[in-house]
Picture 1 (cartoon, rainbow, N blue to C red):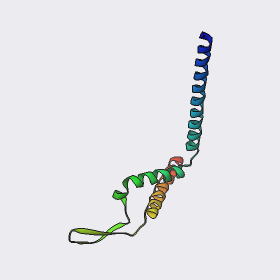
Picture 2 (picture 1 turned 135 degrees about the vertical axis):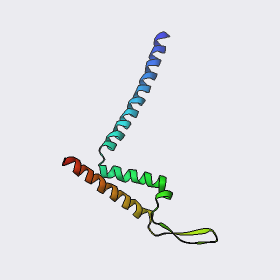
Picture 3 (picture 1 turned 30 degrees about the horizontal axis):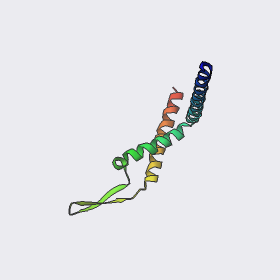
Picture 4 (picture 1 turned 120 degrees about the horizontal axis):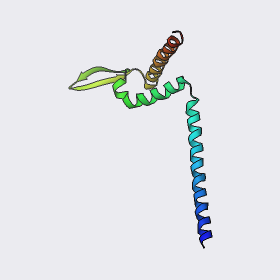
Length: 105
């Protein structure tokens, strides 16, 4: 009786450890994928999340054409896709310059 209970506990513990190992393997794969990204890809991803979070505050393409009876009429002359591309390019230019300056000092 004691031996079979002990064996059962070992089997359960073994299964739990196998699941934990698989979870850790998946985490390692994810971390390796993140670490292999170029700084350009990282900028693209960060700008996407940042823009979605603050797009109402940083929307440079939206202009107010006129106000009638207290209501503002706005036109979005620059699509969000273009705005994000501009932000990404500006940040990449700045980072490239910083990297260049750092390497030349």
